[in-house]
Each structure stands twice: as structure tokens, then as C-alpha cells.
Length: 211
Image 1 (cartoon, rainbow, N blue to C red):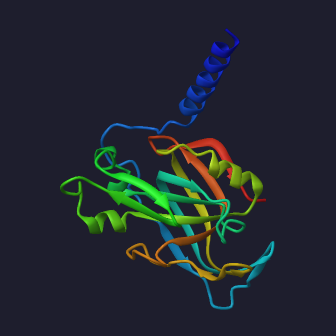
Image 2: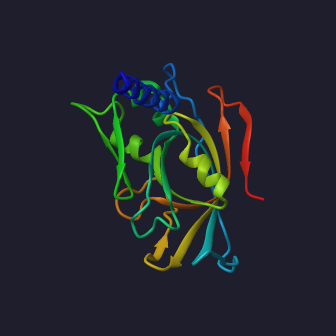
């Protein structure tokens, strides 16, 4: 009897975890119509130390996006600086009809997409409306908030694209383009602020800001 109760408790805990972290699904249509905005910073923009790392800001970066997938890293060389990657999409890559026909995963600091037969939209639209962002959380609260996001969440991210140097990473430089792909195409974002958005793009009162 005790074994049965233990098994039921484990099953209940597993279901509860799945329920809290299950992907968010929406009706058809584009949820995020705006493109990311980027403002190049002057060459003499001051660099700063962040723990054992040295960060050089390259551009201010601001975007609304749908979370397509997230991946926590704990043991790779960059994990001390970048504990989580967020794969995000906007425009057609925020449309449930498109995403239902794509299988999106993350590994080895990249995000990957697969489809059967034909892609739901042209490949260049997939590449130009989605990206994998290496997140450098400016606070532990932001780090925890990023790790708790459900797939499908609509988020606003604000911060600086940077070039980082430090132990075990050498020089790690952010992409400054939304149309590139492959090695070096991911953004390296020093995250200052994250806001949760509702499905109709109204900002939720939940707000996580670097102080």
C-alpha cells in the first residue's frame, strides 16, 4: 500500500510539474508584428566588468518576441556567464499555424528547426524572424525569471548586445544581424529588463528590471 501511495505521489508531482511548465498555445495569426530594434553604440562606449568577465557593449537591443524554446546550460565553458539560451520568434515565427508545423529544439548553443515535406514558410523567413539569444542576466532575479518561462510566452527583452572576454570563453562576440545563420549568428545579450506580455500584447504588471 505504501509503495502505491509513493508511486501516486511521484506521478502527481510529475503531472504538476508538466502542468505548470506546459507550452502555451494560441489561435492562428501573428502575435508579435514588430521587428527587434537595435541602436549601434559608439566605439568609445565604456566596457565594464561582470564577475570574472569583461563586457564591451556594442548596441542597445530591444524586442518583443514569442519564446519558441529555452535551454539551461550548467556545464559547458560559457555557463558561468550565460546560464540560459532563449530561442525566440516574431512576425510569422510567432504564428501558431507556422509553429505547429515546425519542431524546434536547442543544443550546443544553437537552435534547430525541423519540418516534414515542405517548410510552412520560406526558409529565409524562418531565419529572418527567429534567433537564439545567449542571455547574460544582469541579476539573479532575472536569471530565475528566464529559467521559469514557459514555451510560448510572449516577452519583451531589453539590454545590450556585447562582446565578452573571460576565463574559458576567450572572446565571445554577439551577432549584430537578424539575417545571418550558423556559427556566430546568435545574439549575446546583457539582459537589463524583461517584461511578460499578454496574448494581445498588453504588458502584464509583472516586471523584472535591473536596478
